[in-house]
Image 1: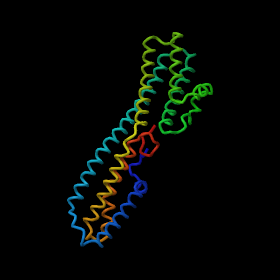
Image 2: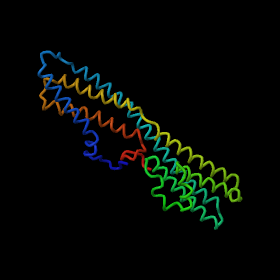
Image 3: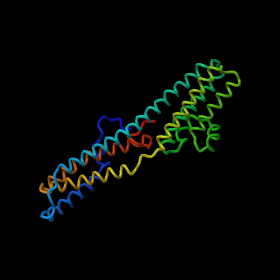
Length: 266
């Protein structure tokens, strides 16, 4: 995640370099053609470009709002996972007073840590058991390996452990209900994170937005045909840069688990 207050200009330029190249080429070609065909091209009022720029601003504000909502929901989901993980370990410690049960509590706590790591890796499309070797025993890894959904398999191990301890009379009915409720919240939050990760933001919206920005550049270039090219191109770059940077920001925020610098930290 980007944690520095000052985002490097090189990072921003790298994200929009191809779009800016298209703007330069488009503006230059239209300016040259407009100069050669000047007698045949009617004057283009700036109000048309202004109207189109306003429309782009509305489209961008909608996309930014939807993308930030997805990012913020993902942040709340992962925050709930962190809080419930702490509560789960504290509950286990409070509900087991016997000294011989402490190793079991330790194993379950380490499984919970492994579950968090595994879920984060799975959401990012990375190997799900990477960095989990220090928290899972060889027996647990052997049990988890056949499953496609590794985080769910880890969660199941702890649920089965809770059930076994309940059958042995180690937990009261109230304690068993509390632990099961926490486990259910783990499953709910995992499903919510997977829902965000698997829900695709409409790509046609982004394509239409890019087309509209390039159309805006073309119309503005025609409207500024009497301005020197040396002044026109920087102006086109500056105006379109704002639009494209906002669009790129919204694009990266809309997928908060894709292992990008702007993603939700997991």
